Amino acid sequence: MNILFLGTSGVHHALIAANIYLKKPVVDFNSIPDFANVVLESSGFPIYVGEDNQGNQVYSLGAGSDINMVKKSIEGLRNVFGYSANDLVVKPVSVKGEKLLALLKLIPASLGGRLWHKLLPALILKSQLKNIYRDI
Amino acid sequence: MSDVRYPISDFRHLTSAFRGEIMKIIYHCYGGSHSSVMAAALHLGLLPKDRIPNETDLMAIPYFDKTTNADFGSIRFMGKDEYNNEVYVLGKKNMGDRYSNLLKGIAKILGEEEQLLAVNCMNRVNMFMKLGGFSSRKMGLVSVGRPVVVRGSRKAFLELVNLVEITRLRVMQMV
Image 1 (spheres, rainbow over the protein chains, first blue to last red):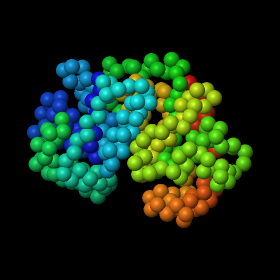
Image 2: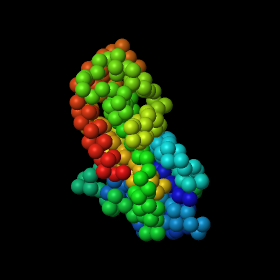
Image 3: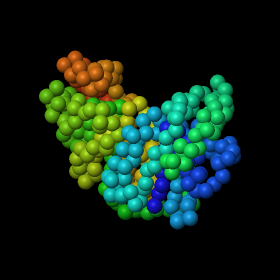
Image 4: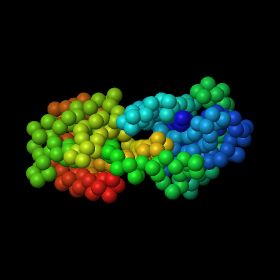
């Protein structure tokens, strides 16, 4: 089975959720591989995070501001190919300020990218680990 | 796809290329209501390519200027082409080419990457289609927006014919 964590950003809260699910350490967000990697995020492709102890492949994906629309498309595509939730599960991850996270990643690196893409999201997400755990 | 990381052990996507299976072709645009349904209709032969359609021709296409907000994100079946490939339409708001990659990525996870072709129609959309589509679908002003979107659709017709021809060639190369 494949498990896809879906957030407004695939390199922030959805990625943290995937790492928590895989029981990887998330105390220091900046040590999470691909955290705030907005170049990877901008491609639109799902990001492979790892495999759980049951052999399920775990991914993170950024959907932009409309998570429900993207979830609908993913589930629709899954059905088009004749697969079910046993093959691909979509788990939306929601936090406060998630639309701001989706906007922050649009700021070019030349305008202080590190601050907008990494430090500010880390600050926003630090207090919301409880919400992320709730969605896993 | 080169910078995407997938498990090395995941080789399922390699096998589907050799199966000669039916392709799924998804034309997508902002609302899944005008350019994508016209492209799908051209692909399926529901619209003739040799003359510019009038309003009656356009309104006869399934979903043309008929979608609602609830349709965003829905992958809607339009029909099968002469090679049995399945043709779909989709409205993805302003997510651009990123949505093609998103769909391809999901298909890859499912091991079906070689069976999917996602085609973004937005680069064939003109200002009349945008304004008319916004008025008719978003604002609900059908009597104002529809004539404008029909004018824009007629103007974009040959561009869409070109897009569909390119897509059909790509499909032939993929199968």
